[in-house]
Length: 276
Image 1 (cartoon, one colour):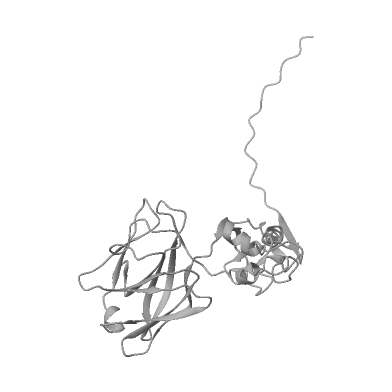
Image 2 (cartoon, one colour):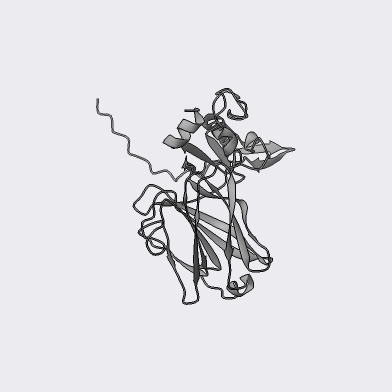
C-alpha cells in the first residue's frame, strides 16, 4: 500500500476561553457560578450552666452581678484579671493568674429559671482595662458543673465547663467570647448564638411551624446560614439557596449567604427535641 504515516503537528496552545454576555453591542464577562463555600458541621449541646444574654452587670459600687441559667448545681468563678494561654495541642486554653489577680468562687443550685449571683470586686473595672497585651483579659468567668474542684482551673475540665472572656466597655463588663469544654481530652469549642435555635429545640408537636424549614415548610430545620447565623432552613433548601445566585439571600433578613452550618443534635438534645 505504501502510504506514509502522517507526522504529528505541534500546534500552539489555544487561548483561554471566556463566556461573555452581549448587551447593547458591548461584551461583558458572565458572572461565575458561586462556590458553595465551606460547609461547617456543628453539634448542638445544652450545658447545665450557662450565661443569660446580657448577664454581667455592675452597679458602680464594686458589686458585679451575673445572671446564670442552671439546670444542675455547680460553681461560678470570677478572675480579675487573667491571662489566656493557648496551646497548639489542645483547644481548651490555660488560664494563668497574675500576681495582682483576685479569684472569687460561688456555688449555685439547680433552678428552673435564671438566677443572679453577686461578686464583690475589690478593684475598679477601669483599672483592669489599662494594661493591654495579647491574651490579657480584665475578667474571666468560669462556669463549672458538679462539686467544687480542688484548686483553680483544672487542665482537663468536665464536659459543660465554660469560659467567658470579658472586656470593659463604657464602664461595664461585656462578654465578648465564650468557650465550652465538650468531648474530653482537651476538646473545646467557641460558642456562637444561632438565631432561631431555641424555637427549633422546643419540644412541641413535630409539625410545628417554628421547627420546620421556612422555605419547604416540611423538613425540620437543621442548617444555619452565615454570616447572619439565622437557623431557619433544612440542609437541602440551604444548599439550593447557596448555589442559586439570584436567591443567595437569607430568607429572614435578606443578607447575602456565604456559608452554611449544619447542626447535628446531640443525644440529650434529640431527646428534648422529640419530647422524650
